[in-house]
Length: 298
Length: 318
Image 1 (cartoon, helix red, strand yellow):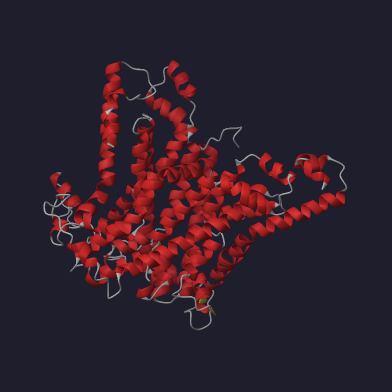
Image 2 (cartoon, each protein chain N blue to C red):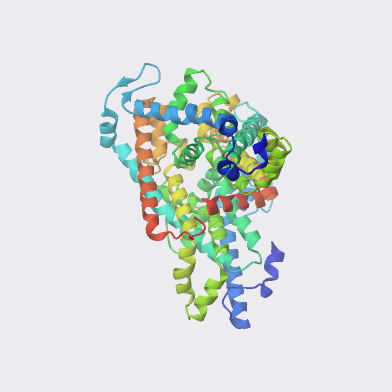
């Protein structure tokens, strides 16, 4: 990051033609403003890293970002678990939820998107409108009846209510993203394949899916992060601490020893953020491009 | 199978044997429904069915253990008389009306800034986007509580300017703004969309305007804004709908998850949750959900209606 800012003097600036001096000041103003926003945006993330190495008592009061004498006691304390449940259990549960969601979204949404983008069937336009409609539907309208249904089926405190929608393509955003992507692939591909005697399943599997890799990666990462961060779903459907995801585990932590073990809680916050931050650093291109296209074609 | 070689457009026009064309159409229909089957099942089972059920529950007294009892409009009249419901509407309205414009203005401002220069743009864009991914997590809500507590960084920084607030989180007058700040901090997602829109504005337009002597402000008002109005519309629509439904951050930011102190962050969905899952008033909660749906539908309708007046789609693009 320091290299990009250091070479600022030669940066091409605003589209207005202006003197060299004005361009330099413009560039300077640009970088100062961008850096200022950067400091505010990243402060909380940097803060949580620094704070997790401080003793509990110093976390809120001290203004230093990083402690002069960093300690690892907060992290060591996590090994004791929360309410006799090892931290690893929460992470396993979250991982199970997130990976299960990713598989479901990839399979169900790509099948649906293929039908919308590549097959002409009666009622397609109607179904497409319904699908877009669900994009705007507040989830809370479905919350109570779905809960009642899963309660009658005795599926409370399992991951079925959290995952089943992912396997039934109810996340319209990802269907939409994949439809947009598939529509842009040349039609000739399908026609050529059909000449060779391929059916839809073959075309979907051997031609369209491999070409859709960017859209699939974007959907997978978003799904993973959403499931990892999900709070309301687990809060409603999981009620036994052994089944808790990381989000719920942290809430329990806070309720039980939040004040006494503040450092431990901050350390846990950092550990819980890590998978998302790692995914972000590795795949930020896919995420940002996915966001950008969803907006442009909406 | 003779039809296979022809493109679909030709199939329609050619005097092919109608039976074969029909057969092919039927095969396509079958394939379509097979591929769509997960979505169709999901739509019926998890969306359409629950919507009907929810509408029915809204007119009943239902506590999950005895069967629903029809009470007519009772839930709705009780709702309007309920002071906590009124409070939740007020809190949510404040949150939407203050938070969403601030977030979008910041997103647009920063997008305009980043669009000025290519160097460093990718880095800043990525860094500014990061909060949108982690902002909804419990971790960040807890961090937020710490940053806005008494004597912490926000409090101390404001004191430098002579503003004495103390801890925002424990203060009924300020805790909502702590939540608003958390939303505004996640301006990266709409910013990315604005930035993509700005990239598509043809440069010739600016050059022509400059020849005509238009300054930066007029260029922004007469060229940039109309040209990116579709993405503005998209962002306003999505961000507004989303902020109506805020739940997790409000729940976590308030101590004990009670959306307090003094119901200061009792957002609509938090109250819905309390009614449905703490008090098992499933009928009342369903009625609340339908009021939320109506509010969201109304806002969506107004936005779609108003877009005729201010959103410019390019002729050939639509």
